[in-house]
Amino acid sequence: MLARRIEAELGAALAPLELTVSRLGLLGHIVSVPGVSFSDLARMSGITVQSVHTAVKALAAAGLVRDHTTRAGSASAIEVTPDGSRLLQAAKKAVAGVDERLFGPEADPVQRRIGQAVLAAFLGESAG
Image (cartoon, rainbow, N blue to C red; front, side, top):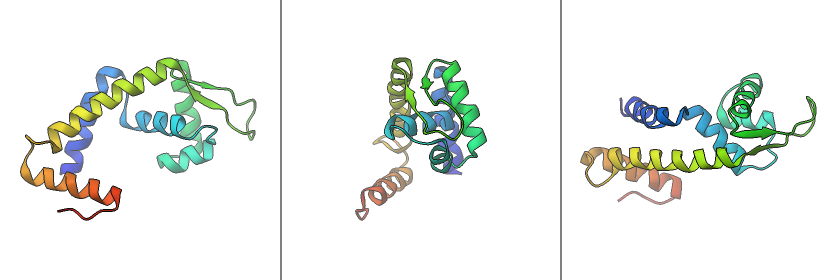
């Protein structure tokens, strides 16, 4: 139930940016891993290589990435454009707002503890 609420809140926060959670993830992977292959993007995103190609084409058409890949099978050369970088910054603010609403000081105490436990797990610490 909480996962669905998080997904819905993220979707609503990203909608004004004309961005989905999956496209945000894809942009994040592209900016974080320069020279990432389509296959690696597919693995990281949990989608097929064909879906990655389609998504990258859509991101390129929107002016968010440039795909300098010369031909199928060659090393990929996908980069986030300045517009893509600006969109990522706006998305980070939107996601931070969702995080604050769902897990911040004013959130339900149980949800706050869940958020703290998840953060501690990612940081390799014990939740207290």
